[in-house]
Image 1 (cartoon, helix red, strand yellow):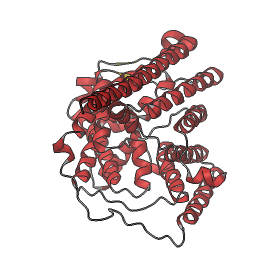
Image 2 (cartoon, rainbow, N blue to C red):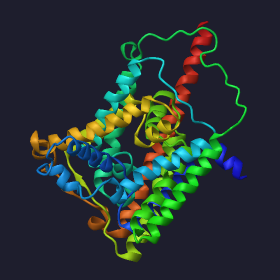
Image 3 (cartoon, one colour):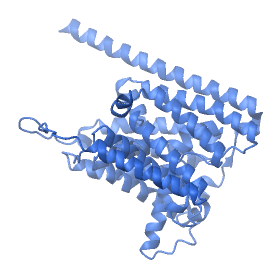
Image 4 (cartoon, rainbow, N blue to C red):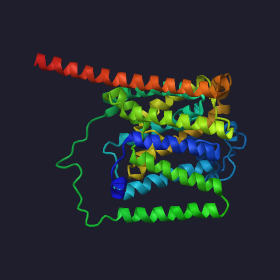
Length: 399
């Protein structure tokens, strides 16, 4: 049973429902949400500081708080915990292997896509987590704008990646492209065990030294990493597979996870009297969401997918990671230096369903909208498959 859990991929519904439950619990404990690109932006700021750039006057960095280093923040431990969690599962399943793209253009495409996605995510004040999966259960209207925009951006992205100029010439290989390796000993699971024990010791250290919130973030980060790797959770594939192949399983699982998380979150808000986290809803939200959707398709991965693929040894996603940080940092500069805030954000407002229509109205409205999204996804899936079968029938008849 344990071996199967460690070596077999999990049903995405199971992984995402558990992720939704954990994200709601994490909010109840820390009053913050599962997110990653905010920390990517701070990392970009720290890199600039390392090279002597004075960012003290940058409004965006002041807004997201740059105090301390990445290991002094819960947001930092969420990110690094996710990397560690995905690495543990990759090693346990003996799936780590350095993989370099056969087409060198993919390196550039990954970097460009990562930059666009990082820029868009921070323009919208959230990515596929804070402005999507954990944003909807916070009942923030900006999340719904972001979701629609991401759908538009990913649809445009699928049109681009299907073009010949983007694909380039196919790489021809002689014989087997990847000769099978004889594995006399599977050492990776043992390394995974060492990593797990070392990280567990680190979490215990954080708790016993009074750094409780950091310990909580480190623990939940690892849990989230385990879930995204075992469930192969990637929002890029959810949209791309829906638009290009008519596959809706991942998209439906994401919706189910958000629904469960919304119910638990509204209970947490009511019991503990917490304020839901709300971001500005403005034209920047739509533009940022569209850029994010476009970028993740061009890069072949969102932030969560990038993490576990990078830990698998796929070099392409190192460039995506670098691009994410670069794009987020570029937005931080453009926020006030290029007038992005005044042009696209300033006219917006923070709107939350809990404050607008009350807790009961908020959860009912959210579940209804999620049900509509589920229905649309199911309809698209069936319609696409029916269209493919019709085309096959016509071709067979003509042939």
